[in-house]
Image (cartoon, rainbow, N blue to C red; front, side, top):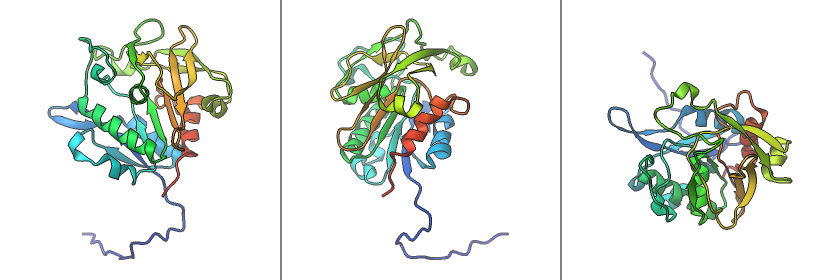
Length: 257
């Protein structure tokens, strides 16, 4: 039997190596025989591998956290994609029968993102995360099922769900064009909601080449970067230089406290 012998130390930080940034990743409410908190591992791995981060999962339970207090402890926040959509009440829209909602996820994501932004901490969004941030900044959403857009439906097998790709054009001189060192990129796309009216203060970073849908945006309202993409860079990060660039560029914006 192995016994633990604690080696006590004072509470001050005396690390020889710089502390790894602590990045919050918001979970979703799902059911697997019982209600659970869930986030796909594919969102976590790139933060560890390319941003050298310590990942803290944030429960999507509105009463379980104090967003203002948590924002003082996180070095960054990632709002992930999800099988649920942002509720129409958040932006004056109407929910349709195909919508899967997660109202607690809405509450936690909006409250925590707002506190992080006001504390000048970086916030990044992927898919649903982009939609949440657009609404947070006063924008609206629309259904985007036609053309290159693919509905995130339970009828689609997970193994083939992310096979669908399309091209986006990156804004000249934008954060993403600079990070990815190219003007166009082929991306993996799985979503039904998309940007309708862009939120105030957000700058377009990318648009779909076929129909002009806004595919990425950025902002820096309080000194910390806000960057979001509609596509899924975490899905093909192992084989895509552009997807790796999304996470590598985020690493440079995380500052430990």
